[in-house]
Length: 182
Image 1 (cartoon, rainbow, N blue to C red):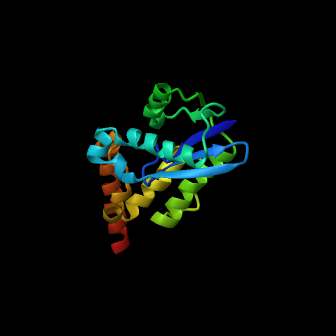
Image 2: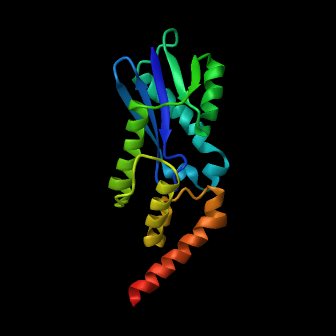
């Protein structure tokens, strides 16, 4: 029996990260949340997200009644799962790196979008399940419109945020603020 594991939000500028686990035989999906705080400061420097993912996946596998003798795990190739791969090898869990598509990918990306819209208030009609540059700029612009209130949602541990994007966000915020005064 196959259990798929995928993530959403690890490369996005803002918000929590979601880990989804799917038991293919019955369609049961479990979601786990990795709060944005893990992608900031000391947590990020100490690679805490990688450790926390191991805990989250262990919990998710219990919920799916994982059976070591009969289940095979198809694991997304993302770097967020590096420590999980080591854990699987250490304890003898049968897994394969895989490109996860279809039901689980759609569900975990949907959970991320739900979080961005409902929890953070991102209202852009251009926010979609498709990750990449377009989604980055939707989220970047959202931060810029109310920079000082929204920066707390940014994964500030990302090097480019501190070396490039933060200054650009402040600059854009100031331009928007000044244009509204006119």
